[in-house]
Image 1 (cartoon, one colour):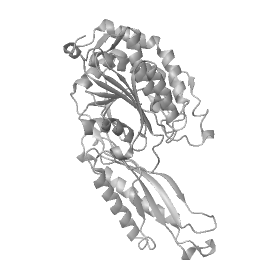
Image 2 (tube, helix red, strand yellow):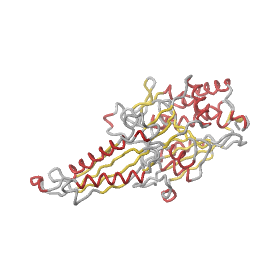
Image 3 (cartoon, rainbow, N blue to C red):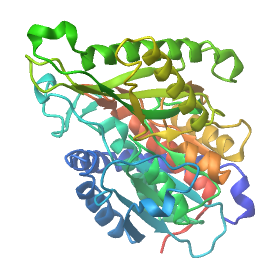
Image 4 (spheres, rainbow, N blue to C red):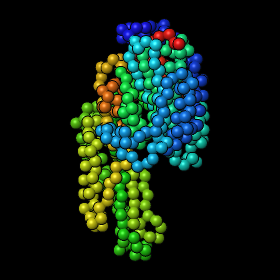
Length: 435
């Protein structure tokens, strides 16, 4: 298939063969996905899962790149998010396919290997890092978000190889970390020079394409108190109780930001696009002492087009105003520390060639038209769309309970998504005979 022909639609007979190849290889894909889920790739522990993926891609003959994120290499980029942890094990892995003849359009197939904490194991029906299949579901932490998608990227290319084909353009298979807390992993790939004509990220998006998503800011509020013996609690200042005053004020800011939704295209129809979450709280040292300190880790969304620095100024002002109305905090104002996501949202504009190709691939795999929707969660697509003017298609399988107990992904949906990715690669990149 020549470069000029990559603009044409895929032959229906070949499309059917590709979907049959996905079907034939799906048991292998499922075993691979389960093996990947068994690696507990929590923050700071991602390296073993990345070793697994490195070996899997190297064994397929891809040119391999593996490195720890270098904070100094990305800290001055406008997409950088502040970091408070070591990056020694924050490993990115990229496998590169290079064609015999660069005849088609290049592509990045991206996914993140990091997963969120499990919470108490006894609140899961089964251990979270022991994947199991029941009916149409694969269970396990990270099974849906998003190790099933990472495996789908690899096996979509495998099925083309099983048919004797390879992409007729450069394809980068990216497995990044830090998606769940900063987005710095995808940014580090961009800063390392990985660029393409389009990108696709099979996040668990319920068989749909993401049209737009919010940005996200993480921050920690440090509140001080005045410790005394609990018998004299009335003369002290309880830092934990004071923290709730600040949280209440931030709830009011959340409501104010939601009230602005009519000003932002794609978000005006959502009930509650801006979500504030006090996600972690710690404070005090002794049950019989009035606590002298309290820290609250928070997350809040921002609309696409809103500069995180402007949003941070509103957050700072909100906390300061709440402190002024509190007897102790007025003279001991809380401090706000930005300690993670400092990321803009994005809009995927309609009408790109990449979206048209994905629409045809989805129609072949699903027998239905591709739908798009807006999500109020973070996605690494913002790195491609905002900082490289690259259309990034976030599109992946149906799932339930991501970031919750008993996370699971639909296997029938995953199989169809894998088929869609393979069809997309075949039309977008074109095909040549495999070596």
